[in-house]
Image 1 (cartoon, protein in one colour):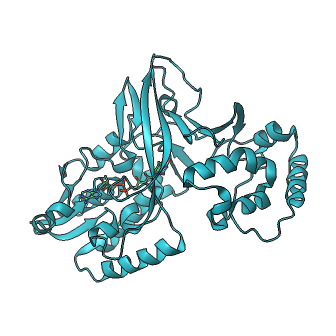
Image 2 (image 1 turned 90 degrees about the vertical axis):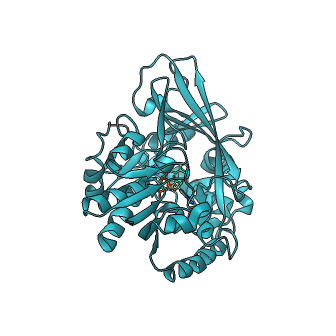
Length: 364
Ligand SMILES: Cc1cc2nc3c(=O)[nH]c(=O)nc-3n(C[C@H](O)[C@H](O)[C@H](O)COP(=O)(O)OP(=O)(O)OC[C@H]3O[C@@H](n4cnc5c(N)ncnc54)[C@H](O)[C@@H]3O)c2cc1C
């Protein structure tokens, strides 16, 4: 009999398991996939750490979380500075003075602000009715047309005129020549990859891979006094109110016989004609000098049950559905729901670490 059965060996499960062991209690971690790490999983190919489920850059303003993860890995100095490719024109992201200079030839913040104000005024939109109008109100027509329209439509599988405006309440505009996307106090990639870091978190803890909780629920539940469940909350309750919606992704991972394919870790393709949204070149996360390279081409995908759920669709309908599942969860003694799937929230890794530490403090 274990004190805790932890369902899911992602970052949430691993941090919680580590804290269980530290508190002198016992736990068993089970994982449906054939590897630990959840979506932060990395594996080595051609000497390069490949982010199997998309680019993962650790960034946080939380000193406690930063100190915590640094106990399990040494982080490099990687700073996320993605670029956008619009029909061969290259723009810096997030929208900053470099972007405005390339777009309009302006060189000072005052000129950029004037140009933006002029574009917003020309649009004549008072109350935005959809995402297109909202974006034009926030950044003007030109930035919208080149850098937002195609990319967002591909991400959501619908034109911006058919998307609700609340998706982009805010678009960060920066009036400095600063391409640091996250602008977090602490940022980097664990040297040797995330899997190594999560292995360290799970050091000395029993982990069973290829083990799906839901298909052996009775037997596995009997093994522990408490359950920490980090899988999809609706699946736990057999979708009794219907499935929560997600957006999914498909990654086409290729090894190429070239040393440097695109000169940057992340390139967004913002036109509508290119069917994918991003290409990641993994070696640039670690300043790699290997003779070959590995890229992943990222295609947004409609989600249907059974597919990998990546991004929750936190609109009114799904949030209301989640609230019903959450009410069921509160009436389920001995089971605690956590992590991004258990909470039906997009969490960055630092938020997941913080949430797992808070839960551990409360429950242990
Ligand atoms: C494309 C993409 C890019 C991202 N980029 C960043 C980034 O740059 N920076 C950042 O901070 N965050 C990023 N994130 C977020 C990051 O992936 C999450 O914060 C983190 O992985 C969440 O950890 P978790 O443990 O909650 O969930 P997960 O990593 O999803 O782990 C949950 C685990 O539970 C397992 N599981 C589910 N159901 C069962 C079951 N029934 N039985 C057994 N096991 C089960 C799953 O297989 C999975 O391994 C990104 C996410 C995506 C999708």
